[in-house]
Image (cartoon, rainbow, N blue to C red; front, side, top):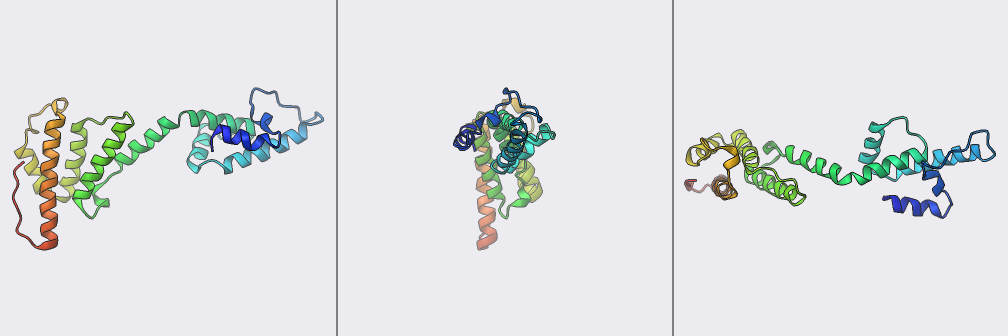
Length: 199
């Protein structure tokens, strides 16, 4: 729920002042003091129930002492404004967590790494081709050590400066890996004779 939606929801009950941390709170001894504090606590609870669990955890990690509506709302706004960064962090975390052991097919693992890398690049987070390739090769080493060794022997990787790995070389190596995995996985299903492929 965005800040605008929260304000709109509270506007009809004339409770938006409870959200503004710049408005001085009444003293508890004032005529409307008790009412303000009771309503503020109720609205704070309503806010917490109407935001995602991730944002709720995030704002309470920042300051666990927040209990009133204006404090909670300010924290929500602050974190919602930084949601792109937060979302990017989550996407990068998910990319890091892609593991070959979570896939029945090594080829699917490779394809998911590439799709996730492209998704990050579309958000402006460009992972260098060498790093993406190392992730793919790390997965291959777990599942198919022979193929991983062949990639190193048959490609210019061994003496290549990581910063010099161009997209052209990267795509060439990845296509070779995908080609071999396709035939190996098809062979294991169909019992075909393995078709050799040089990278």
